[in-house]
Image (tube, rainbow, N blue to C red):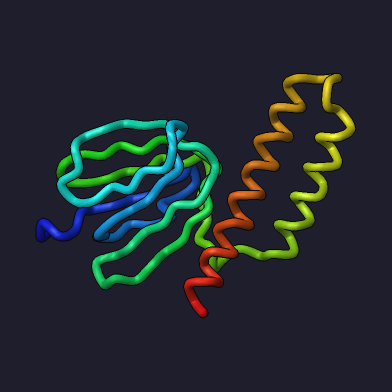
Length: 143
């Protein structure tokens, strides 16, 4: 591994979604968006739902939707443990919009009645918004 790249992996409870040498990754942390390059100082941070933007060793961009998790940055590798993660090119826009609409409707129905259900539906809505944002970014890159 040269100093221009670093090992990178995104894993969910179900599978390894992405594993490759990369030049940089940008992630949405709870403190704001950060970009990590090779030789970054070690850190651990909580991630919020959003879009992961990756530039691999061949200068190709990869966009991944994520529903939250953690990032660990070490000198020799970067690991993201995500609740869910999906490559943008695998997303179905119609299904995303349908799920988003259902979540919005449910959120309106229970707004103040059940805090736990409201939080769960809000998290689902955040996930769908991240998926839609990832798909839009990926389409713009491919133009």
